[in-house]
Length: 407
Image 1: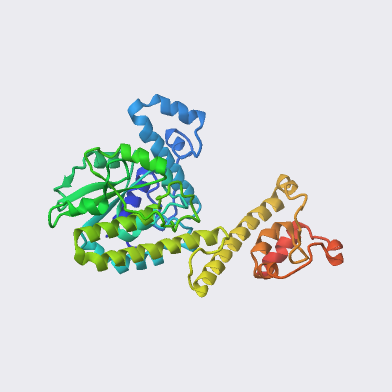
Image 2: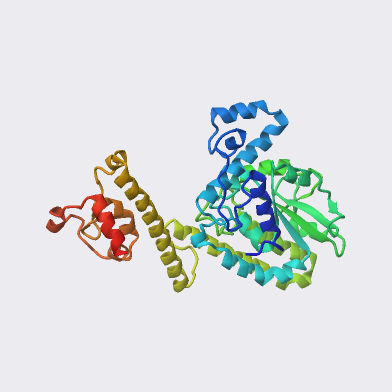
């Protein structure tokens, strides 16, 4: 997949190189981080006493940068271990990149020649977070990602001026609804004819966005969206709405792009509507896919064939992962007497829905199967039958070998 030509992907490659995982996203095997020494501390998911001691040994001005680096390192290494795509942040088996590339192709010709440029200013806690939507907007629009606390990105933000003469004279504004912030449309209408807009979008929760806003230079004007109070966020299925007019980063990006283009040029109505439509469609697909991965119903009306395809793909991936875990467990049970003790007792070995005995080690796979899902829709007894009461569950190693031979 091409990285060149998409500033978002270039930003992600820069960040994985920064934390010491340069092979992540290249298709090659990612080399594990150091297991000992100071560098190993940056990949710890929790604050160990060793990490606290290391942090206290640093100058006060370097501690926040070190904390951000540790958070980025731990999140990116966890993502690499779990085979998450570096670009869309889904597992590779459920990768959303093909759909995002299609959306990008729909608007790239308009966007490359538009009067609006976007940069995502991301909080480190949002990196590789499942419910983050800002990276989806950045992928489609080809927006650069800047993380507060990364030295290169801090220098970039500190060096911003109201008008960027080095970048085609873009007028820079930060999207944050603080007191005194102008509406986006009013701001762009106050510019001189022919001037372009460079929008900085804070990507994080409201608390995180507030922290990001404090570190964006105060001479950069703040702008706010004109959001109808009756608007219902498309993102409510994944994150709780904490403000009446609160929307996700992807929705905010879509609205800001539309309001900017309409305010700059009345002839841009078609382009504004096109970008809004594409980003909204991408948002709905993103939310639906996340819901399906949580075994919840889709929120938006996609075609049944598309939803069924996603469900089959999801279940196949879960079965494959379950089988991989079973193989590892089986190998341990055969070779390690201590591990065999962990197999006893087989507690959950009966499915009330299907009235059938299921080996406890296969219960997850059974629950994901088609016959079990179909049985859920039927009126079945909730007590074990005589046949099930008298059935003996075979020992785990025998059952597993039979399962492998049947595949």
